[in-house]
Length: 195
Image (cartoon, rainbow, N blue to C red; front, side):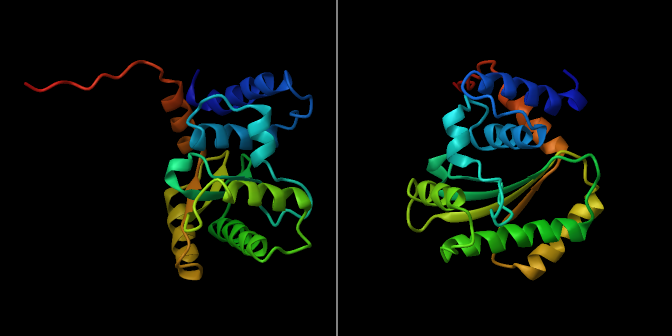
């Protein structure tokens, strides 16, 4: 599988895996998010329909948040996620707006904003209850397209300027594909002994 086909192939594969449990996994934009979450936070392991239900928040009144996960738990970190299934490179100001929307959505969850839908509030509560009270927070933006290094640099600078205490991570198609390839590599790795 070439790098250009990796994300599409992973979407098809995840649809097949999940369709045995549910028939609602038909929108590529949603399944793209599942591919990102599965490979980045579940380390490519089995991502079941239950895992999907426990992390997928994308619907009306979701505060711009598509997914929330605390996986892997040993990191003691809540990940607040937005995914963009697009072939069009966003501008640095688009990326800044996406990050701001995620951060604001998370702030609304912390305040138990009643205008947010019940599903996202329940998923947030469930995920927060799997980690410590003093957990870290990360905001992840996943894009199915390439983003130039110049735009990424500008976006990171303006995000850091507007939200200096927040950790925002931008993932491009290359980053996602690299993670998929890394998780597909199931060859055993044995540490070399030194004498």
